[in-house]
Amino acid sequence: MGYRGYPPPPHLRELVECAWVVDGPPEPVRVLPDGCMDLIRMSGTVVVAGPDTTASVNQRSPEAFMGLRFRPGALPRLLGVPAVELRDSRIPLSELGVKRARDRSLVELATTLAADEPAKETAPWSMNQLHHITDTLDAGASVADVAAEAGWSNRTLQRQCVAVYGYGPAMLRRILRFRRALRMLDDGVPTADAAAAAGYSDQPHLHREVRDLTGMSLAILRQDSGQNRSIEVPSGSLTVA
Image 1 (cartoon, rainbow, N blue to C red):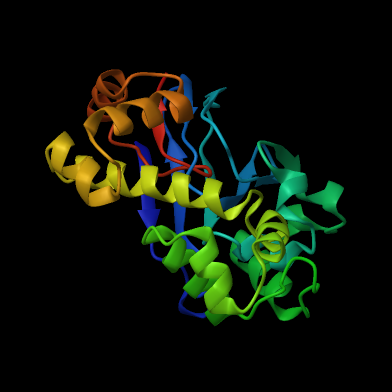
Image 2 (tube, one colour):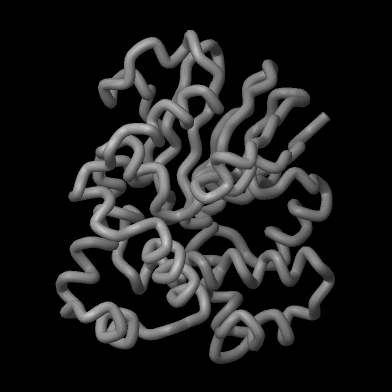
């Protein structure tokens, strides 16, 4: 019962972080932003979970649902839809022009979508470049440094990131830092140490960011996470609301 994650099929590992299933009693859950996007099969429909900027509270269905969590920036290149158009939303895949989605497994859908030539707008970079930019921002590099390394202006990087990730590089770096801090806290790292290691200026900075991104205090977030270890689900971490 609850959340269960699985490694993705080998041929999709460049694009997909994990496959997952959620079941259990219906209850409100808080989904936290993590920079990812998901394909979710629920109630017989395949839904795209866009990149979140803040936490959202949703009612979990009594039936099990499953998904594929795509690495930051990966799913828009398969869909040909700029990530910014999907930001903070859940949209049926059929509304994005993908036909017969309900007749195929999520793995089959992802494999078929990945076989098509990606659109230039949503895939301005190679996969290696996408992973490098994501990792560089995750490590805390400045927007100017990332743009300079790639040979672009800050404005070009901003425009491309909005199409690829759903928000600009500064916002992506902020969300990835938040996700990194939560992972360390889940591993038992003391709050002050996690704040420093994740790149926050101090512990109060981490507390402010948690409240801004989740709408709740770090203490309440940790309490909920401790009560329900089903974390890292539909485009973000999950806690009982």
